[in-house]
Length: 316
Image (cartoon, rainbow, N blue to C red; front, side, top):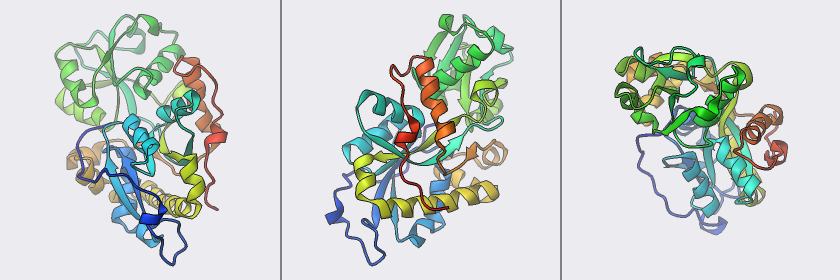
């Protein structure tokens, strides 16, 4: 879920003294947020372009990064205040003691046809039972593409230990499939729709089944120190995101132009692709599924309590 780049500054966000709050009572009136140029970021773009942040007295500067890990690194270093990522890096940071991360709001969960294992018609992979012993593209070990594929295989009693996992960035998967470098790949949108057109890729199995049905995919995080120092600023951010997310859910037409503008998805694909399940509110019960799956599959070596990582949420 990574590609084109928006131009934005990457200097350190600094402390409160170089960002004096105005009469609205916020600790900070300007913050930086590490984002990815993916569908997951669409509600933030809507909040920015639609004036939802401005209505809360907040100016948000998006800082585009290439991965969730890079987004997390920016937050840990203080270069940005908040970051969007798949949940995996947040839980790894917590489990390893790298950073005390708080989840500040949700972003997306898996929906029907928004994430799938795909293959080309000439691939030996026709069903999930064909995956054993084959070459499967993933972005990196212990990422969502790795863990969700393994979970799907486990659900169907397919041995994932004999799979040849091949690291391939999402934009390069179509070429890897057509040039017979891999037999299958686990992809999110918009790549499912794009590669159906460019490589003839067809779904083998939808991720939104079994143990990964409605699986939480991404959210926004900040350090506990920042959350505790900026409670009013955080609440303003959360309120704006809640409104933008609600509008994204209820009016797809507001999202499609933003996917073209910021994610550089062509208009036809933006109209055809399946959106993930957007959501801004954090419920510890479904979120706990993420560290539990990571622990089960060896991406974590110690349990993590998701509820302890959820920052204060704004009143309903």
